Length: 350
Ligand code: PHE
Image (cartoon, rainbow, N blue to C red; front, side):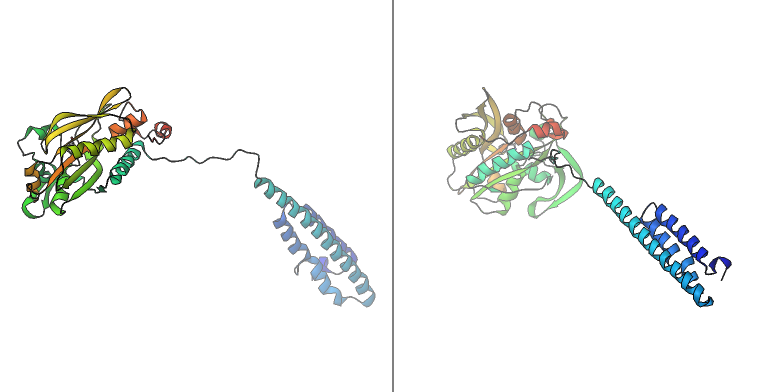
């Protein structure tokens, strides 16, 4: 026991005052806890003075004992008051930090929308599935055979030059008579016609949405990667009149009930006769799609008896339709990813 711990009333009062000062000065609850441990705990000066009471005679012990009790009460009272004040302050700071200003206008999260080209593809698929067509897809990396040969476009034919084909490295293997063949990025969705005809028994009514590629330089009306929707119908007695009626119905459901269409003679290697279809929209005739009857040799190249079955096919570019429907004048806007353009587009319905 040190002199300081010699139990006297003066020692008790000194320890008490030291403790009171520390408890009152604590700037936060952690400091208050620390001060409480130091000045009121088992290892505090007051506790060791208490332990020394046994060395005193009765009169001294009573006197110093009373002083100890008073000191502990005073410390407990100040500690409780400090704690209350510090807790109130802590709560006030926390509430201020978490305050919600209910008068602020709500933040509206940015809302996504279908891309105008996808929206147009959806509308076209709706129109054709409504007529009984089933959506089908095919590979974007395609064999030269499906993209050209099966469609009446032999290797030396100038139509290949028109397509600006992008070939990929290496050869692909196709089943049965096709064998090993160069591979390319399909230049149109028409190879899916051949794929379906070679694997599916007629009657066939399919629509084929998909991306196609040509080594074009992008300008206001061309993209090197764009979309097509192909249609193919093969049945027992299909005529050019069925083709015309089908396309007229699709165009009406897409552009409006009163939109007239016209057919112009055209040439495709894989349809005969062939035509291009225009719609009268916004004051002028717009070219919409290519179409025609599937010739006998395309049917027989795919293992279908041309004496028993007839077919027609058509192909169109949803980008061009989307430009009409959304009043877009530069096709590149569809792929720029500019949110100002995309969010200005609203869903169109006739
Ligand atoms: N595949 C042709 C093109 O890309 C379009 C077409 C499809 C024409 C089907 C006739 C029949 O230009």
